[in-house]
Length: 102
Image (cartoon, rainbow, N blue to C red):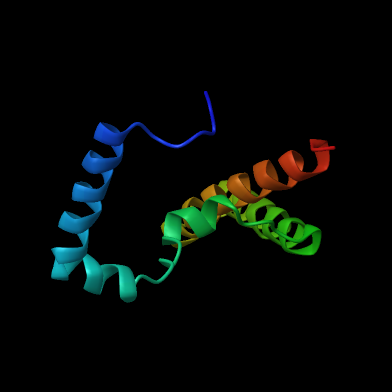
């Protein structure tokens, strides 16, 4: 690839493309108002770095609910465990990933 000037026919094509883009008012307005988009909720959740204390707290609450659910067979406790267990697993997984990264 050379860094010299484009051949005349390629330069004319490029100039015509630039003229066509300059005439596009909608594109010009979008380029002027272009702002970085906020990351989505899933993107932020995927990059969440849980503190060790929060993970320990979730593991403790999950263990307590599991033991209580086994001993009492109360549906409310079992449903509470079912609600707390997935975030606990995800937090433990993210914490382990963070610890194993260099």
